[in-house]
Amino acid sequence: MTRRDADQAGQGRTQTLERTQTQRPRLYRVLLLNDDYTPMDFVVMILERYFRKTEQDAELIMLAVHHKGQGVAGVYTRDIAETKVAQVTAHARRDGHPLCVVAEPEVGE
Image (tube, rainbow, N blue to C red):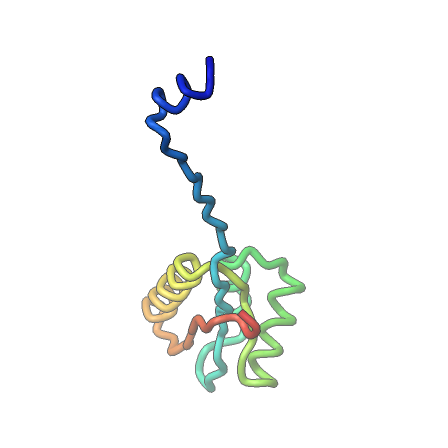
């Protein structure tokens, strides 16, 4: 194929391929906040069930909540973090506990 044939076939136009660069999704920390009413064993159960923590890790996080006022249950993408917040809050309310769970953007994102 000659250059002239190629120009006629493509009609002399050049196609530019645009490549989009994907970005990692923003991450959110799911925090459990301290209150004076939610039992410690309930917080441990929540961490084991919804955040798949071992009993030892759950107890360490629960103690951080108790002594420091908050503890990080996990770090997730926004949709997963919001789902976890909703699930845990619903479970706590069903059982009559005022446990507060929030999701906030990861620092440095």
